[in-house]
Length: 24
Image (tube, rainbow, N blue to C red; front, side, top):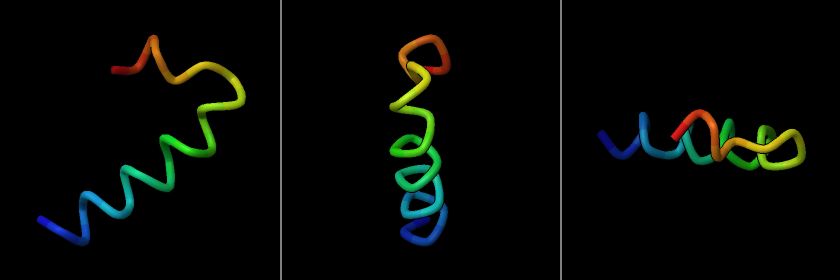
């Protein structure tokens, strides 16, 4: 779960520029 959390965290950081709020 930690690894999955890290991956989602990285993806969230990348999508943060485009606006990841719609994803969550």
